[in-house]
Image 1 (cartoon, rainbow, N blue to C red):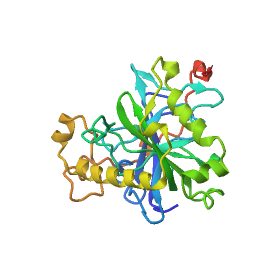
Image 2 (cartoon, protein in one colour):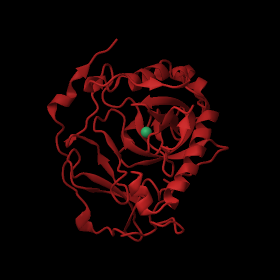
Image 3 (cartoon, protein in one colour):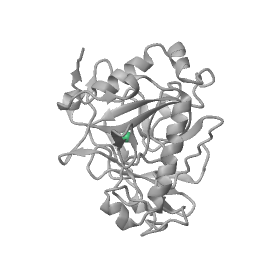
Length: 295
Ligand SMILES: [Mg+2]
């Protein structure tokens, strides 16, 4: 692991409304933001970047970095006050790959694709398709991944890029260097994953998701361009004041490492051992195990 001083702590049990996972600096015991403090570690030449795992493969809880809570812990998304779970789309269980975000990126809602689709106001989403170290993936893990390509998903009319990557420690990582290699070494994966993104909201009585660029997986160069642009937009986000961000419904930008930003060290949270929850996870509601079938 790079950054030995970073670790995570839980507040309250998984699968509860109160669950939060914070990033902490284990040296000074200060809570940090996954969104803003975790370095992007973007190496354009190597094509590598840091990924925060929000949803491990096969998990059903819709865990994500909070945009509203100070220091952006990972929480479970809610819908009408109820915890949100991802339905099982046959033959998958929960998410078909490790899924998460790239720190220090932001899909700016003021920026559009073809003057039509505007950014979804979130950090960039990224899928990780390795499998050999699957058992180690947990919520809040930080992984160095190799970028392979991307898909321009349109969710509710908003641009919602899905980057594709593989853990640099996966046994297939040396063989995969661009999007076309995925079809060679992991036949059917690209098509199945795209179909999953298209259909996964159908059980919630939502329409299928659309895609720009004719629904094609785009190559590594395009993915790198998207990351660069969203990293630049993130720099603008953290340079704004709290009032500007709140007025526009942008994410909070409290942080402990970006010394020149207005929200540097704002109301710092110091971790104490009473903050840590060490009990058992809650049970998932039984009905989320149901399987849905689509043509
Ligand atoms: Mg998104």
